[in-house]
Image 1 (tube, rainbow, N blue to C red):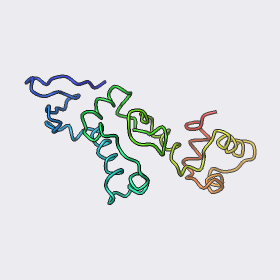
Image 2 (image 1 turned 135 degrees about the vertical axis):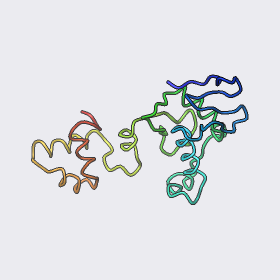
Image 3 (image 1 turned 180 degrees about the vertical axis):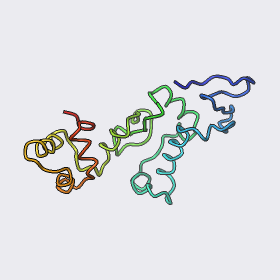
Image 4 (image 1 turned 90 degrees about the vertical axis):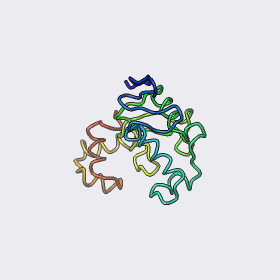
Length: 165
């Protein structure tokens, strides 16, 4: 687990093997961490009208809490709330803002299932897909067409990688 401590010179706080100065200006490459990129992408989705994802976030009124407009407070929250390199930030309420009360970290699979445009919205539908595949011999391609999703998505349901029984 990454933690914040002083670097060898005693001048800058250290995050993993990266450093940051006390004025929230990045030093020694912290801007190249995965967590920084998550934070920056979140800001872009919410505030940059030229960002391709802005229509799904900023134009819907989704914002980042004032505290997280600076990276260090966001980083501190993330490290204390389950951030790991293989996880993504997720809003519990997809219509809510990016803030400590509404965010947590989840796997990519969980995040894909939570998308607003996901056609498979319940375990009941996932089980229906499994039944059609196992009992009635539907192909994954046929199921993908019926439910208007990618064939890989159907495969993950059938193999219990998502929407587990």
